[in-house]
Length: 170
Image 1 (cartoon, rainbow, N blue to C red):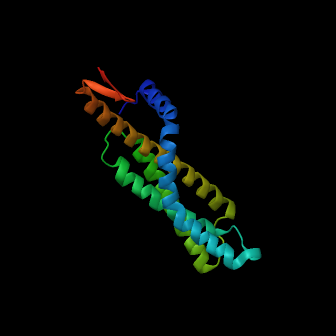
Image 2: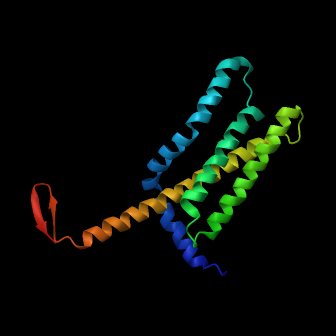
Image 3: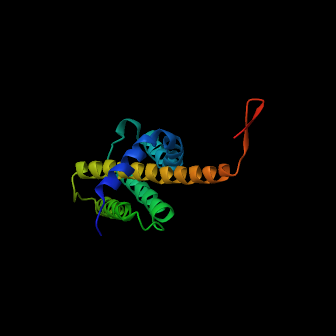
């Protein structure tokens, strides 16, 4: 498979120009997805208060949510698109990273030992969250493009439109 870098660059440029239009929908989607983990972290903080630590327990909650979010992205947005091989590969790779970090953090919690330093989990959590957000934006961008195409197709057959109270022939 040969990658057309000019075409990929143009796609990225168009995507970046359309980010403002997709941010609202993506933010709503992310808020709904991450609401339960935020509540769980809030409960842990409420119970522990002064003893609250930003530790593996908290990070594992975000990691498992990242894995679920990436799973939904992969199956809902990218699995049926043959021209999305790079995005499929990125989502699968970060899904594997997320699951690995979550599995090891679970082992650490149950066995009460340290396999990786906390910084590894912090870095992994932030990176997988960032990739999840970027892939979410791309997914919502594709959705916006699809809606735009439907509106354009429907408007092709129109011969007039209303602006304010006036009917204007096209």
